[in-house]
Image (cartoon, rainbow, N blue to C red; front, side, top):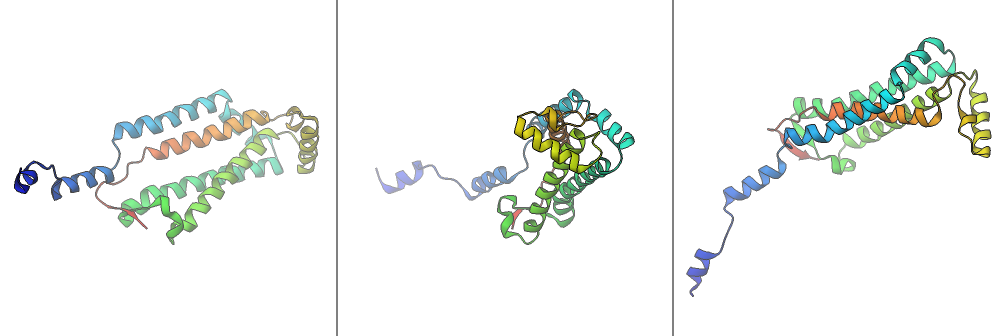
Length: 202
């Protein structure tokens, strides 16, 4: 068998097929897979919020509580809104208005993302913490009282001592705050990315 025969029989990728492979890898995910992936977060988040009756407790804290509990709740909700705006900046402003999708896996190398990503992390953690504290400590008049009860609760291994008389409990508060974020981030994940832009730019 001659070299010419081997050349004829050897499979090879044309430049066109290579381009198609790259395009398929770099193309946006199928809308069905996106719906299934983020739909799970929406359903679980909505279910968790319903299970702990989060909307009722939020309304009760905002209308009946005063002092540091209400301020903590407002801080948590404010940071949650800030988290939403940061996500919208990442998934709407940069891809649709700036015309490219950043390389999120190498955010440390991007002058823009190395500021936004830590800020996003702080808003998520700050919001979650403030929501858990305000939901679980409702009914306590001072922050000092809450801290002392928390110390006693840790010493006695009792979650009940850490809770406020009008609160929803530490565990339920954690479930409620986590469910709220799962629902919100699931909704934001449904926003489609533009298909004809420069992708993975540092």
